[in-house]
Image (cartoon, rainbow, N blue to C red; front, side, top):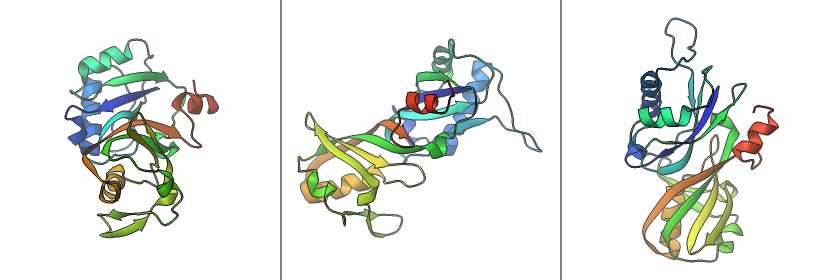
Length: 210
């Protein structure tokens, strides 16, 4: 099996999750490599994506698992020559068994520019910190979903829960700008962490899957 880390930007951030999956199946066909299919009445390629991100959010750290017998040698180059613009493979991992990337990615690190400087402890020490959840149409307390906040070189970084329990970074940014000010904020998903804060390499090693 092949696990890849890929980007979504240069327009690809506006491709919805299910359409992204369709682009991956088309990419596999263009690559002309073997891939396993599900069983049953309507077989489909065994391609697994990490949990969806908000439409329009740029990312440098998305994951996809391909149930294929091919090796990792040359996979990155072949994938990038066959994939849509903005979807680019960054890393390739050859794994021996299926990994549950949809559930085991539990937090994500976001780079946030355009928010005015503030004391992050005002948020981290506020157990009642809330954001406006547009889907619910109400304020929601989300402090427990913020794992870390820090400034580096004038840029804000936020590690937020992701996957089964998620805090959308755009909701957080809207709240921070309303309280502390800012101008034309931008957000990029820079990295993800598995289970108890593991990097992908640590995660695969812990599962004896490399």
